[in-house]
Length: 196
Image (cartoon, rainbow, N blue to C red; front, side, top):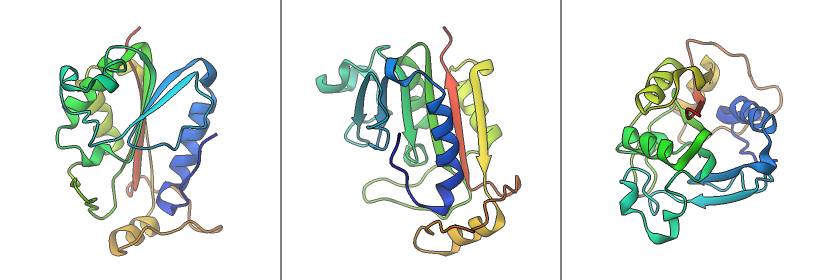
């Protein structure tokens, strides 16, 4: 369904988000991916990739270009944002904009790192981290239905140590520790649903 990264840090999260999306009627969903194209071959009814920061999800929708305005006003069934929200300067603005882009009953799939080193990327910085509980509150404050939010986390000491001390992402190799130690979450992900 989706091209996967081969990072130890993302292995369990990728497997679990793949299962979540596979359980949805993907062929009937209009999907938008923010800053990535990993879900482009998933078989959605329609799919568009909007690249941050060229498409700035933090700005008010009336400031978006004509090329993306069609996606700005309640036209998406699903918005996917993997490993970009930690780089946003104004994540609450972005979360409210995502809510506005979704149709009633639409879903937002969000993934972020937690216990990893700071990773500035070219022209944007590394600003925010959430625990699974913090992600729940964040999405509630953005306006998502609290009953429609599911949060998850995975990590362990070995993976956290590897990704805090190493200047490169550790590639996953068979046999690496995939045990989940809840006190050492390396990644956090959530699915939030807009009220119908």
